[in-house]
Length: 278
Image (tube, rainbow, N blue to C red; front, side, top):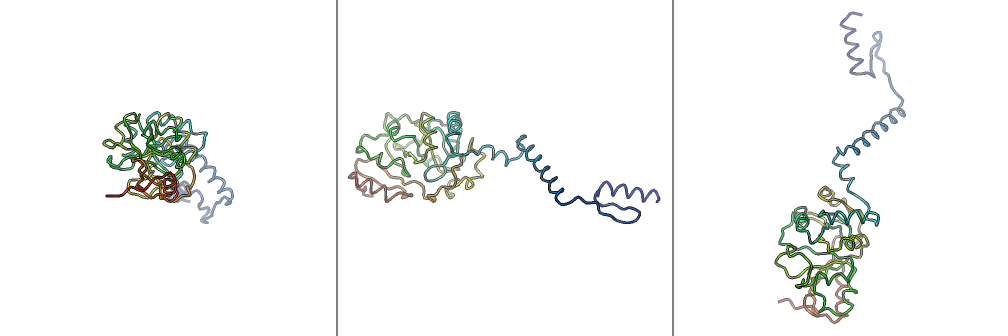
């Protein structure tokens, strides 16, 4: 064997270790498929573990902010809200972006995430019906009406009033505010824990379909401190029914939503009539 041939064999053995020539005959060195599979699996596991520890992968970053919407993560969500962060949460209708309604920076962040004009108002969410009068005028409503409508898939539009503790920077120029008490335990717990109202809007880009599972807004996860997964929401994409109750004993449906018939039935039971549109 001359020097040139030896050199080629050495090079082949380095570049192609599973294929080599021996005395002019090409032979295949192989590992049984099971061993290969085991080695690949071990290598994959090591790579994934390193990636998750190092935070080098964008996907791992997404996984790091997704938690189940359970009581165990409520304190974490409250801390994020108090720090002025935006979180994504399930409600009884759709997934929503939520933040402290009294934090101008956080509210502006929601508008940026959604690509929404500041002329489009945000609703607020509170933990209990008894909290509503801290933020809106309710003394013109008959006793028991709000308890009949809420908690549930309804947004009631009320006047703010001079005694409202809401920041004037929220929905500037409007003297009314949409209020929600969703029939969803997780968001109610964190609303109570925050000690204030939450600004709440659907978790999607403005003008795009609403989200009924967290995958629907996956591209927006990176803008949230945490994303809380409540699974697939069963109510469709209609959202809450929005009803204007600013005028005594008159109502106006601003958005039919998912509970129009039930809402109208409750209002009429309390002697409300539909406002005439002029």
